[in-house]
Length: 578
Image 1 (spheres, rainbow, N blue to C red):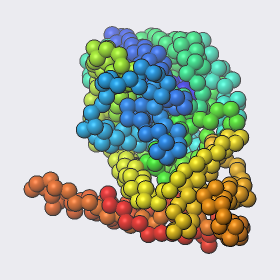
Image 2: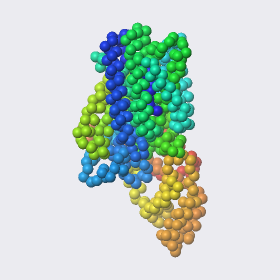
Image 3: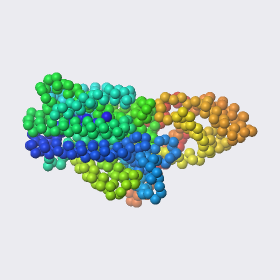
Image 4: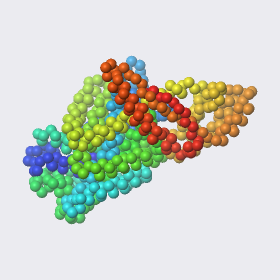
């Protein structure tokens, strides 16, 4: 799936609205800018280059790039790590190679969390912008229905989010032929001096980051073949055809370039065929961004930057194909609110464009860093990549930044709120790990049929055991308590063969019931010394951590999605100094 399949529906239309009937040289310049943008960003930067920087687990996106630069220590939490190169490339493990200075770790983490949050906000704006733009075409054939665009869009979005539970494989099986026909229709029908208009050209390349983040749902080879062999040529032909119609019939088609350039009468059969497929294509583009959001949330959960929530693995073959019910419903509510609130489509696209350009620039910086620090290639190559693609990303970001007062502030605020929550969540494992180190005695492991059981047996004086039961990436499972208690009994026999009989009897009696012990964190802000600004900074930190984040942690506890009774959960108070 690729969200590039619908950006042209509003790309030229947004440019055209800036001038009643643009002269021929402006049309040629605008189409030229769009085509060069398609070649430089989606094609060269993402399809040809960025897909090589996926993780060993097949994940993409800005946070996966961060984990490639600063990989999780092996064995630290038992979860998979997002190390794009170091665990498979023996060269990268050699000592003496250049590594990223630790001074940059925390600033880079905060920036990547912010970029990831903006990508997640795209999961709200992409369905809102795409579907609303496509549905708006009905005003060309039926002007009387123009007032019903918002409710029609909301109904379509509701249906889209309701079918997410069926999984990527089933949805893709339905959407694949629709995408093929859509691009076929685009292929068959076949310079500006205003810097602000770059914000309109940006809409032609907004699907880049979704393509990279979605690599866990599909694979790099299929994405490259479909984009280079089919999607890119179809988009080029579509934009060239629309540009030609603007030059020849500008007064007729300028109000809605995409729909007005469809051959035949506005209420004819061909118009309605294209209209239906345009709506279906926007649904597919929205689906791609939604699944990309699922992948990003999964990465954050595995890196302890997001609370663990229920995740459904919809495929027995691809572990990246997942469905997260809680995220799906939040996206649905937020998208509907955005569509109902933004009555002006231009303001909606402003919010959309700012989030996209910020993430695109962040991706360029991280890939350039990986070229040098992870791939260990020439620093000149990394610098050329940064300056080359960073220049174009910067142009688009500058144009989008000017739109912050006109709607882009919404995505900025969403990114700031989400990144703050993720950063605070990221700090918790460090506090917990220092506390838990006091209890570890010895550790043993046993692997059987994709199930790994780790035993951390505590000192006999404490009188209890810690067991981690790792089941892999599966949604349905059954923890066999009898098997666990038998293995603990075996450990007791090995540790104390003569006096273990009584203890083993107690273990078997206790293991008939299950009790979950979870930490209840009381957050305290650590005071920092910042000179004259210390008082103000410490007050802000205390308010954000002890007031806002503490309340969020109470409202959304980690046990909220557990399929167990509250009577079986014991909460132990822990003071977490952040």
